[in-house]
Image (cartoon, rainbow, N blue to C red; front, side, top):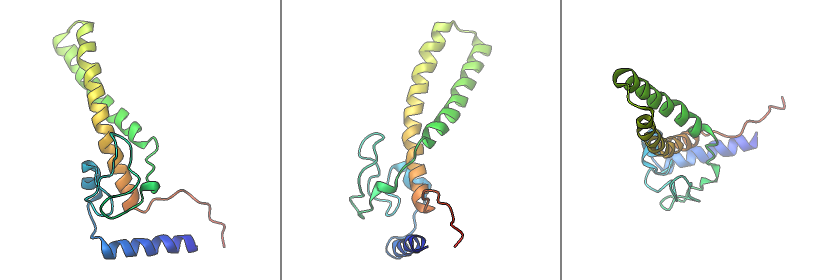
Length: 138
């Protein structure tokens, strides 16, 4: 119970110092989920240790496999749909499909992976997501 109180106290303190920001916009731009100005990433997909602007520790940030699942579903739908449309309308040779769709899928996946990872981390912070716990009933 005291752990929940500490999380709530930190959230109230954060709102008093830092104005609320749009987590989607901050995530898409790769900015800090608290101040919206510092960098979230230290590399292409590597989350930094902390925000250089507000000092927020990014150790809470664990997007897990979520971004990969979303990217596979979204980009897969787009690329397969386009490939089927091209096949039905133009009937190009198989080698042309490989030349078109493999590079396109790679570029779209890598781009979308960073964007979605940023959004999931900022949403995790704004919604105060934590690891699941069992209620002891006390």
